[in-house]
Length: 359
Ligand SMILES: Nc1ncnc2c1ncn2[C@@H]1O[C@H](COP(=O)(O)OP(=O)(O)OP(=O)(O)O)[C@@H](O)[C@H]1O
Figure: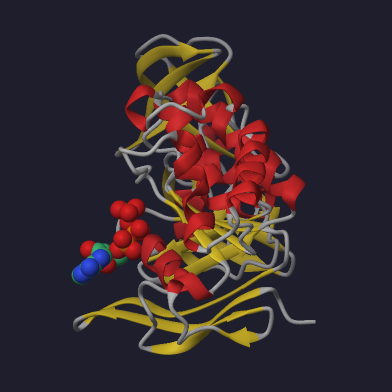
């Protein structure tokens, strides 16, 4: 069975500049997919190509097996919700939500019934007569969502719809959108540069890098099994050391160095030979007082680094430390604080250690 929404080898150009370089993506019916990537990587361009605003120079967009590449946006059964709510300022909430239905010439009574249902769903029953200027940001975004849902789209496209909301409201609206999308069984594609937002909302995450897909997977996959050094760094494993590493069968051997212990860790299919990038998240390691030279320790299934505490802070929950490991700096969290100047050992268990060949 083919997927409900398919992007097939899409190349998109702005003038001479190729922004999408052959993107392939398959989304199942009812699935929530997040497009995640740093600024300028092509997320919005991909969403707009799916919507029909940026037709690909080559490649195709298919919905339910039908090629929609040549169809105008309003003939694709899709609705788009933007970052800026783009509500009609002179219309009431009711009129904004019903706008797409009026364009489709739905009878007045049917529009009223649908608008009432959508308002109930969004918890906005009492706000129908208000104009957008008299609503909060979260309420405006709900109206924009209501207007999109009113036309009962097969596919809901969301372009950073939460980024203008303040942090607390964003969390609430995030869960409301997910719950609604699941309840209605709508297929959704959501552009965001917020990692946590993608993780909590999406069934699968598509990580884009410079117009190409770097990895597609469940939140747990991309977080715990990043396919490349780029994905590991993007998913928060920003602490980086370079080490010589050799794959031997199903193990990787790391030789002792001036700032690291010798280690043998599971290879997990990685083929390494020579200088490699070793990455880890500061919250998934253990910090302790250094005992003796790091090169003398060997710990089964873990790598140890030795360093000196340069800064401490308390962002809440755990203590955060900046630790100099040779010429590099690591950021490491710990339930207790280690004073500045103290020599410490960072223990990185193999499941928290991401090794990739140095490019
Ligand atoms: N209309 C346009 N004309 C020319 N270049 C464009 C146009 N729109 C976008 N670009 C360029 O295409 C690239 C991808 O842009 P796009 O908006 O898809 O990125 P994005 O990943 O959504 O970024 P952001 O998170 O900053 O919105 C960028 O380099 C951008 O400068």
